[in-house]
Structures are given as C-alpha cells and as structure tokens.
Image 1: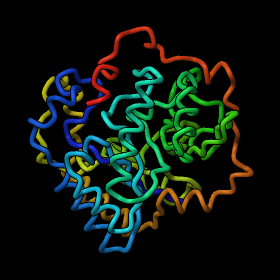
Image 2: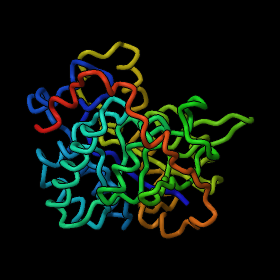
Image 3: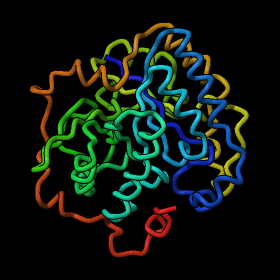
Length: 305
C-alpha cells in the first residue's frame, strides 16, 4: 500500500531559520504555493488520483481559493498546524490554540471536518505525548507526524516504518508514520521530499515496489527549481533544499505512471488495526511538558495572530 500526501506550505516555510520564522514577515515574501500546488492538482486530476493535503492554516487564510480547489477536486484536507511550529517548541496551551485555529479555517473553507494531522518537522515524539490528548480532544483521529529514524529515546517503541496506534484514556490515535526502507541491514527514508530527490531512482522504485507500507510526502517547493534562495540559511542547507530540484518533477511523474497510490482515508480503511502495534500513552508521557515549557516562546506570543 502506497500513500500519497502533500504538506502545503510555501518555499519560505523552512524550520530552524530565524530570518523566516515569524509569520509577520511572510506576507512580504513572493508566494509560490498556489502555482506549485495547482500543478500538482492538474497532474493528479489527469490521472484520477486522490491524495491527502496537509495544509498550513496560515496558507489557508492567505490563499483560501487554493484550499477550496483542493477539496473541490475530491482530495482530503488535513491540518499541518497554523504557524508551522514544531510540537516540541510549544507549550500545551500554545499548541492547542494553534491547532484549533488551523482546523477552523480549513473546516470553514471546505465544509468538512478535519480529522487528519501532521506536525511540522514530524515532531510528535514520546516526549510530546501530551499532544496526543490535545489532538484527540479536538477530533483528530489519524496522525502522520512520526519520523522513523530517530534516536531510540526520541521515538515510539514500535517497529520502524509501519502503522501503529497510540492508546490513551481519552481514546486511540491512529498513526501512519513516514515509511523506512531496508537495505543491507540498514534503514533509510527515500519516499518523500529531499530524500526522494537525493536517493537513486532505483532505490526509490524498490521501496515502492517491494514494501507493504509506503508513506510518501512532498511539498509544492520540492518541484520548483525557480524558487528563491531562503535568506538566513547556511550554504549547506541551501544546497540541501535545491539538490535534485530540476529533475524532481519528471521523477515524480514517472513514479505516478508506474505505481498506484491511495489517500490517507483509504489507507486507514484498508489497514487491519486489530493487528497493528499498540503504544499505551502512559501518565508520565501524557503529563510531560515540552522541554521548553518554562521558557517564553515566540509561538505563545504570536499564536493568536
């Protein structure tokens, strides 16, 4: 089963970059998210293929027509937060306010309940277990925020790269993490974003052809070789963002030619959740604050904007 998802954010929504972190600066930057996402929509539409689009609330507020087009063409819309701040950099209240704001604007635009979530930076970890309770409390039933290749203490204790459930006293959260391929006894990611651009085409095809579970994810900027250079990033990160951009679109189209994909909702209906690994959300995990809980956060100050 191959799942096709997109994180709808603009070229300047790059994490860990003080020059572009503040939403107050974003309206002054040349947006490319509509033209890049429309190209994706046209490609999927020509193939009759459905996908799941995790949209930033900020993008939805500034480009409402784009979100309406995504929904009108039959695709699923989930939340990718409002202000693109990783969970582990927020307090619980700040995270909840950001989540609610993003869900409201998306639901108002699409007329549909938002029940899917993906955190910026795949930042749902056991240390942020309290976020699971917040997600469940606001109607999120499916999460796609777990990255498999983390240090043992920073990842959930489940087999790498496959679906699992997180159980809490408030319900269960279905988790569809990023998939990890195996080669020569090692695990690696190659099915999304920069990993897709950098990995040899043969490696990507083997992952898509052989593995039972593949979670792919892309950003509109992953196919935009004309995007501006991001102010404030190191040369190394600039290069990482741009390597493979010129060939990424053609590689993406070849993958769509060769393989079938499903959206998140279809994947959830196909998975036998009774046999999926279970992670109990312990009281310690649920009550543990963010590592930055005691610090004044940019996100707390600006979450209501």
